[in-house]
Image: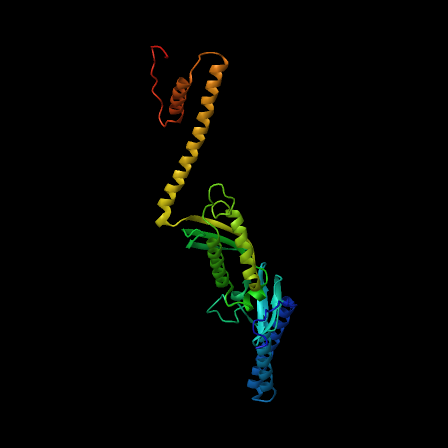
Length: 317
């Protein structure tokens, strides 16, 4: 019970050069083969004696050096090998090269299944930058509106020992944590902020929301030896069942804003026209005629269609 929940710290293994042990192993196999062959020849010539001992020595040499050659490991760039010896953590090879380690160690990588533990190459942990594409999921935002959201996570393993020994499967662990963070963050913020509001929203503050997701996700996967490089929201939309209604609301808001701008501009133009008429003494208008002129100008300027001019050939009054 004393080791329960303990985080395994990484121990980088200082392994021997694989080239030296490869030479020793091949030399030993050659000597063992020669002893075995010479023993067989002596045994057939004399019928016993030293020939039997030579055969036994040759077999022992072949077995020993064959086992020694099983300790050769090749580490490619951006790869690591987490090793255990009889159930205990032995060390981690992270630096690329050709090495020799204890031939009885076994590589550990829970993400690789149905592979013999002695197959070290297939159980290497990749340290390369990888992408997790989180599929669309339906979540209710802070206002209770169902929205669809998806994100992509750029990540890499920086501590292969923690990634292998502290969690069952670091790929699944990251995926589940990513789902949880996206759901929780979406529930906190509304899809769109209210008009004139400065609160964060999923649509208006997507970069800030993504940064918040990245920080929270990094905290969750720290014990798994994973570094989150970036989080980006790739899809954000209302759920199909309310998308049409929300689109109409957005269109109505856009029309209102446009009309407001038109009216503000029209009032300014009418005010400018009246000032110019009075300033240049072009025509004097009483309050009733001014009101009629203002009404006509506003109809022309604020109308959806082009106005049809009517020429008045009579008196203005």
